[in-house]
Each structure stands twice: as structure tokens, then as C-alpha cells.
Length: 136
Image (tube, rainbow, N blue to C red):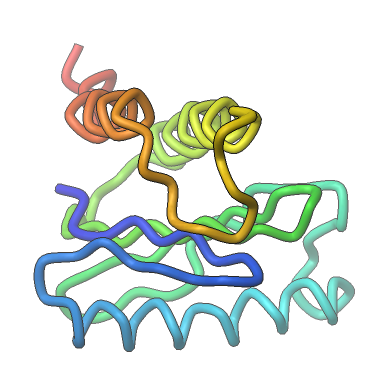
């Protein structure tokens, strides 16, 4: 189950149930992202790869990261401890598409929270379908 999705750019916001705890997890994952982006030789990742994979696991959560070409970071926190990498990649691909559509709206003010009802509905659909491909 997805418990938190964070979009971090110049301005950041987090939507979460247990806001303080998940805010701390997201904040810690930003350090991991910066380390992977700034030291690609140590981590083995390439700068062309937008999917950063598993950033780190905690006792109850797994934290995954994604970096867009405009340096906007998506962070996914899930309680599923047996998540397939393909499901996470698919989630980020679909979420990125929804995000691009939302920020491309001429009425969206860059740097502000996305308030589009269409975006909220698309994200809700993406979250509800997370991991369902593994059950089929």
C-alpha cells in the first residue's frame, strides 16, 4: 500500500497520513537522491536513468525515488515489502505523465501546489492500481 507520494522541486509539499514521520522519511531520502546524482560512479547509476530505484528500506516502509529531467524529485513510500521493481517503474512512469499534464496546464502557477481535480483523480487511479499487475 502506498502511504506517501512526495513531489519535490523548488517548492516542496507532501501528502501523507502520518505527516511528521513521513516528512522525515522523505527528507532523508533527498540526501540519498543527492548522493546518487552527485556521485554516479559510486552508485553505479547513470545520469540518463530517471528511475533511482530503492533509496532505502526502513522497518515498516520502502522508499523509492525518481528524478525528472527538470530535477523534480518524486518519492514513493510504500508499506509493501515485496514490491516488484517493474510495478514501481510503471507507477513512476504513469505518475510522471500525470504530473507533466498538470503542470502544462496554462492556469497552473509554477512552484505552487497542484490543485487540479483531474490530477487528483488520475493520481488516485494510479495509486489504486499500484501492484495489481502482480496479482494477474
